[in-house]
Amino acid sequence: MLPRNLRQEALCRAYVRAIAARAGLICGTTENDLGFDLFLRSVEAHGHQLWDSGPQLDVQLKSTARAAVREDAVAYDLEVRAYNILRQQNAARPRILVVLVLPEDENDWSSQTEDALILRRCAYWMSLRGAVATASQTTCRVAIPRGNVFSVESVQVLMDRVREGEWP
Image (cartoon, rainbow, N blue to C red; front, side, top):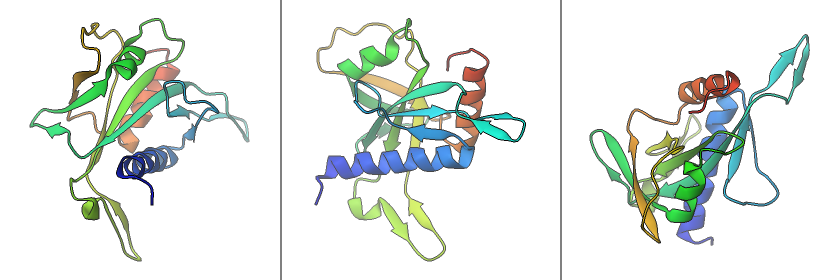
């Protein structure tokens, strides 16, 4: 059996892929993981043809059962390497952090019936572009606004902004 952290990672990938599918986006990976786990791309219609030529958003995935979920934000301790990659202002493409918060008890992560497959808790997104440098050598605590739920609607808005040349 895969270790717990790899099962959490797999659930996070599945969550993002499900949201991307519902939003009508391409969700993929690069051959080498050099800082980003997935990318999201819009599909553009040209007459009756669809083209994979839309804007791209790079996504760093994290999954945890230990995030501090507060009234207004989700506090998460991000590795400094990932923090520094995400905060770069001169990056070629927009990028976001997505953190899936799972229940502590693994038995509560998901359930299934003939009518529903349920993945419990929620994923939140955040752009760290332009965030201040940290003196820490290990982790940096980030506070993701609770309003930044990674949902079909929010990812469509993010991709619309990227299409317009804006960064999240």
